[in-house]
Image 1 (cartoon, rainbow, N blue to C red):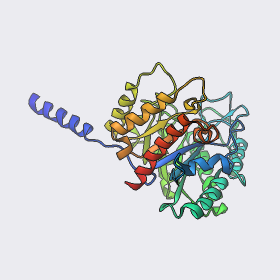
Image 2 (cartoon, one colour):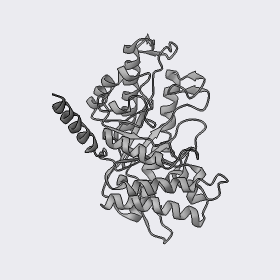
Image 3 (spheres, one colour):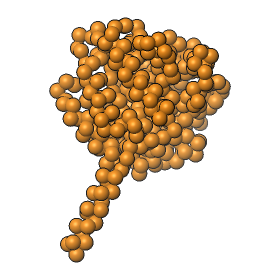
Image 4 (cartoon, rainbow, N blue to C red):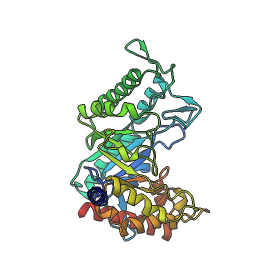
Length: 345
């Protein structure tokens, strides 16, 4: 009996080790933080460096094939997810966010316009750019959010929390369809809460609702976040694991391997992370930390086998273009080359 138990344990270990990275219809998903009053407007010249990259040799090629538009707070004191500001957002704040997202000449409209212009110079990319929009979190205990169908929502009640999420998903999907974008396809919804501390019980039902609309359900938990290992059980189609290595110099490069191992164990995808401190003009000189991601992701097969989400701070790729230097060009070109190779693979 002991030998049988040992064999079962070893078989389980082999199964876990045999897991591979998750993939989906989006190879390279750019995170675009937009909506809050503290963010840039994402006009055409802001978002163009995320659509196509001009290499140091003068050639230009398509870059990301997917864009996640997300926001944690409105920049005016209200939060869309727990832990980001003083007050919880209300229905009016959620509606304000929708107007920001669909503002003419900015954000989604700017992206659609830039892609159309690039098609004229680069030709058809061979894929349709996919969009992921964010679902806000109805924060437990809130009673002043507002009404749906004349009924006041009480977020102590799970049914009311679900009703608010579904209402918001409908509003986003309907508005996206009404805008009639020429170059964008609504692909899925993103769950903004990065752990499962407060919303675990809601997610299977929300997942079913999202899937009923023909959309994918997407999550990006922080490093070893509570519930990350249960991402499939919770109803997500893909989950990207955050290494959370870039941001603190005291975190050693071994963290990247640890995060990759965890992703492989649970069949997750990976997130690439960097921000404005990687600029050669930055006094903080974080470029080597961005390089560490590229080295580790190449060495461990992440670039070759995993779907990837890219956190670039507020707008690092735009900052690379606006702050030219040999160091910035080298970093931007190397990352863009990996993305180019992934698409051609």
